[in-house]
Amino acid sequence: MARDRARIAKPRLRILMGSEIAIGPGKADLLEAIAGSGSISAAARQMGMSYRRAWTLVEVMNRSFRGPLVDTLTGGTGGGGARVTELGADVLARYRAMETRAAVAVAPEMRAFARLLASPGKP
Amino acid sequence: MARDRARIAKPRLRILMGSEIAIGPGKADLLEAIAGSGSISAAARQMGMSYRRAWTLVEVMNRSFRGPLVDTLTGGTGGGGARVTELGADVLARYRAMETRAAVAVAPEMRAFARLLASPGKP
DNA sequence: CCACGTGATATTTCTCTGTATATAACGGGA
DNA sequence: TCCCGTTATATACAGAGAAATATCACGTGG
Image 1 (tube, chains in turn cyan, blue, purple, green):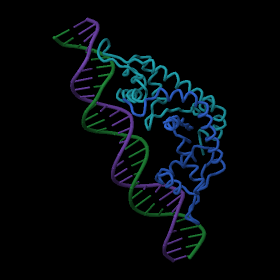
Image 2 (cartoon, each protein chain N blue to C red):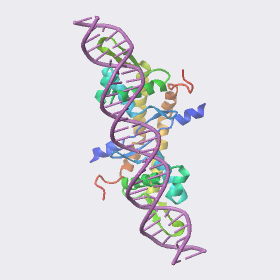
Image 3 (spheres, rainbow over the protein chains, first blue to last red):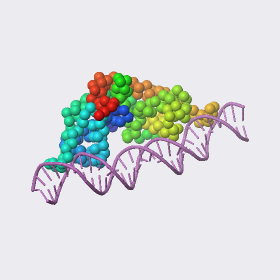
């Protein structure tokens, strides 16, 4: 159906820092989840990934940019927490903007492209 | 230097077919190498990958689209060879066009983004 | 009829990545 | 003072993916 086509036609955007991915679709989602939940572990649970993985992604993000995108606090009420910095919010907003711009620019040709793809049930 | 920034700011575009990547930067390059050399093994050597890997990529491409993007011939003069079909050339051209369109649409914000990234030698 | 270079697979090995698990530090609240 | 949930980190294990290797099929040219 048309909804499947729309799901297929999603361009993924990645910003590289050397050979590492500074930010991409997964890290952006994680950033939003942290902003919403106020904790790395909560965000990890929410996204169905291990805390270890989420923490590694955060570490890479913090290391890739001019400053940390996520500030962490250990101990205290609730055991600690994490907070998205101003820079982090800025990065996220710019990334989302670039995502939609790229999607819009590519949309017409993406539709033409979809007609070249195989049918769901292929012979 | 500025050239590094340009290299970093390269958006990568992938067309997905279900969970498989129908075509992406690597497969596009491989397609061009096959078109230029007339053989999968020659293209694989040229790109520094194993024949196995190149063949697998071709197999995925052929399976993902309406028809094969690469026609193969086994035996004969030179032992055989491979040829990019008309559909393959079409797919490649459209993919390259989408790549440049996405790059152009994203370029200004990408430059702004680069200023948020860490310096090459990071503290 | 044999040799050659390529496509097409199967098999084995190795490396890498992610996951699971365990532990310590931390600091506010009961 | 002890407890709690979180951050932070190390270590061991498992699975996936890539790579190296090994055959086999093929058909034209010598």
